[in-house]
Image 1 (cartoon, rainbow, N blue to C red):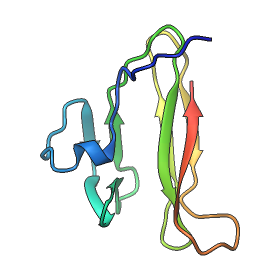
Image 2 (tube, one colour):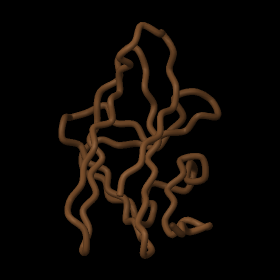
Image 3 (cartoon, rainbow, N blue to C red):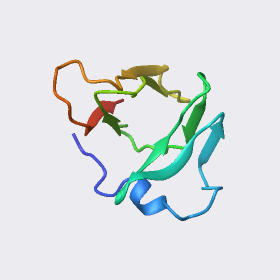
Length: 115
């Protein structure tokens, strides 16, 4: 299966930090901020209210693939839903767990795929 060597849409927090409040292709409803929780680790962060939404304008080739990375921690992290709605494909969503299910007291990045 052929996959694009260069992404058609990329919203990398490291590259976008400092780009300004309005980032083309990103729509925000509620409370989402692009910031560094820890130095050198920028991320899109929401502290509520529930239902806050961030939307990214994605473009795909013939074999659509999406990779979502999020932070999973042991305390004070909520869940989020990543949803994909397209013109040619049915709606798809996946739950991104914010809190670890094991006993490890470590915060780390996780990644998942959607199609």
